[in-house]
Image (cartoon, rainbow over all chains, first blue to last red; front, side, top):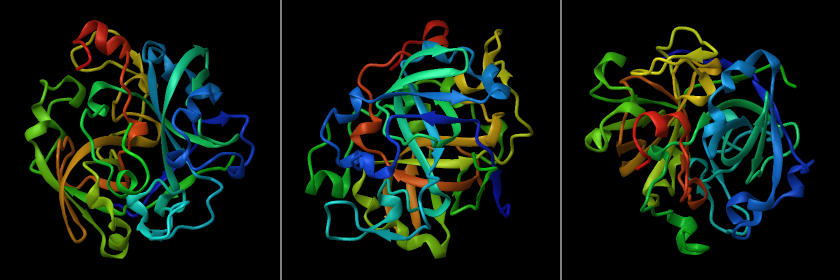
Length: 155
Length: 155
């Protein structure tokens, strides 16, 4: 196994959320809360050509760095919960490697600027990768474990 | 912007696919091709406690390193296509940061071993993160751009 992988940002999020405290934990947000939340992803000029053709997709997967997360834990107590869960059973930022993932709606593209909604990220979040959301990412029937049982049904 | 992010594997894929040439490019595979494809994700002992609670989820998101990809390009010609596309409009391994993402069905968990299906990864692939697939990752109505128009409708 290779000892490690070094990544560099390909862009950054521009958002009206300035601080993690500005937004509810995404999986606990009221239904549709983030649908109205818009912003942009600014891709660095040297990567702009990599966006060609992305505008035809309705949704994108953004992999980002939880740059404000201070350290990782193996067990976390999700907001509003009392029982600790393994960090890989949560979307907590306090995870090994501090990688985050959001599926965003792509409203449009202006050169190297992507206009998105569904944004649950804070301003300045470093973006590591952008992928088109395809039919293979969409699962019809899902179970969502502790999230489903104790909070709300999958919607 | 921070200069970079250093990641280390949290585990590895065990798969009957030994080499990239053993599998069709996932987005071009016949429908349901990968549904029958099973294997395991072996999480390193020091991260095993992070899996607690994951067994209640039907699907997981695996972020991995395309460790066999030799270099990145900004434009790629997808398999079976003639026109180049921006790499961020494809799921090509030849991308800046070489991060890959698969949504896998979680068949079961035996300690630090996850049994999965839908596996489209080669043996030894370094796993960087595992997340539960939640309702916010599931989009009902999607457009899939050049993939949809020129190949097959979203299924």
